[in-house]
Length: 593
Image (spheres, rainbow, N blue to C red):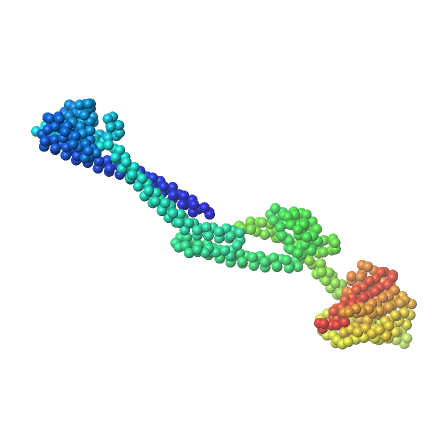
């Protein structure tokens, strides 16, 4: 495109050159014809003059007198005059001796006059006597009404050739100057046309390279100006559309990237073309290792391949629940559907996976919770109802047995009261309806106060309880009642699940920001498979022993929520038959109460 001006200029150069050459030949021919016509007329005029002189002098019959008359025209004018009779014999000549000259009857111009009776005869030929081309014009010589001979005038064409050469040179100079000026004008015109076109082409090239900010800057008018405005309007429209597409693409990418559901796209060739971060997490592989792979390889983990194949075959949506057991169990709600391109042509399959593992776990927990609450309530209610009905029947008359039944009813009612109270407290804690009353606390002193509350259980089981050094104060910010309940539950569990004569140790450790409360016992321990579930409501490792100990199965669940309300964490380490260690980490300062 950068040489378009050169091609345009070259085309005009060639056209102008052809026109100039043609014009040169035409003008040269016209000038030569014009010059020849002028020369012919001049020869005729002079021949007529000589004819009139001969007629006036009546010297036709006197050859010597005629020769002298004709000889007088040798120098004044550059013409040659020859007089012949009707037989072609030369009677007189202005340049040569007529006696030595050949008969001229065969000359074309002489024959035209003497034989053809033309008013004049004309001929151009090479003169043997003069040795160059000559133009001859002959007129009849008339005496008393009869043709008695002919007068011929001739002129060398060398004069015409010299004049024509001069004219051709001048004409060449003039036409050359015209061609040069036309070439310069053509070049300027081509450049003026192609310069805005070059600008337009540069802009379109930048648009092709996705530089949509480029615009045509030209002052061209007419069609070029209209084209420039159209290109600028097109560029502005493209820039607006591409900006909108990029924004939509960024929004779509952000949405897909931040979706908790896994998204994967399989093209018509069965290759994976798109995958978000959640899908990478579900498949436990980076997308760089999966993009471009066949869906049979990628979908084998959740057994998705048959479902993808079914969508390709039936072109219908599929909704299934799929499972994976490595590295741990996952339950996925899988939605598969075809996606379409232009003309509603199927382009592949889109797969969306929702992780419902936690939902299923919570559903199971809820089901277990309902079953446990029903079971926990059923046992004391059954006992109270049974013993009360026995007493009401009047069948028991023994005072000692009556008191025993009443004590059972009383104990079971207290158990019901504790169960209901724990459920209500747990519900309030979860709903954050029990705000913390924060104040600076000495955790060492609080641990010693709790030990006094548990003194009866300690003495009953002859448990050795080790407490922190009372002289070493450990302070933090917290709710005294809630922290007391945490220590009471954890230490109480340690005593309850430790064999008679066992040991429970409560220790405190602190750093710059946190305090660690550690409760260790050498009791029965917790099986490894039960560790993840001990903080669930009503979950018991040993149901018979837990119920016998008077627990409701909600203590550790309450402890966990109370610790979390203090922005803390609880960990457990245990080996069955060797003991259990609870580690509670609490911040010294409650920044967000």
